[in-house]
Length: 325
View: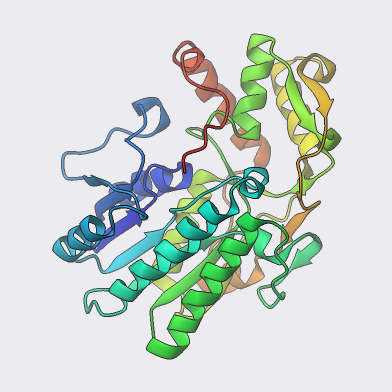
């Protein structure tokens, strides 16, 4: 199998991709600025898995040297500053990491003969609020620093493809969920609140609308883009089922047999949050043969089982987002 490098290997989706790639027989190099998470967040790593702890902003030479030594035919980019509301507080950090540091890396990669495919994992937030499912031709309309940084990175890579023939494929994914997710995200956070009696702040009453794609379906979509995606093309990966955040919380409460009012309390809306991110994924289904295989409720049940199994260990871990510059 091919050699694959995963940037952002310790992110939720990155870890899920590493798990699935190793299962399929890929030789994998993981790169992340974060140390590897406890094993409750991912499958055991075999001896052949390589990992480099390095920061795109500070360790470009080490990253480039490691990539040259490994010479991966394929790279998946899941690295970057996440979180939407927080991007308003220090927007330059989002631009520095999600755009400027990436351009430095792309300048290096465009000269490497070993690179066959580069999959950029992007977000529907580059389109702004989309109350109806949109196709890949939708114009950019980002409304937060987070979204602007992603739109700029996408546009830069697609310009590199046109000018240099850079082998980039862009995938835009619905909200990730499933076992192993960071505890501050809505699904595990709701489960933890319901199981421990803590209150969950429901920002804006939970009226925002999202689609949720299971982490194993994310990994399958990324690998389909690596294997069958065409350079310069953009693909959407999303189920056709959409939920308000309140409905997400209600579903968790139903599965646990806990009253919604016991778990959630209305809180002020986060700044700059778009109401809906809805995408049409017909292109990925037709061209790549991808379709979500795990339903939303099935994924919720699986995540509940994961939290129950590791609840004692999770009590000692932070449940809130901790920003790293």
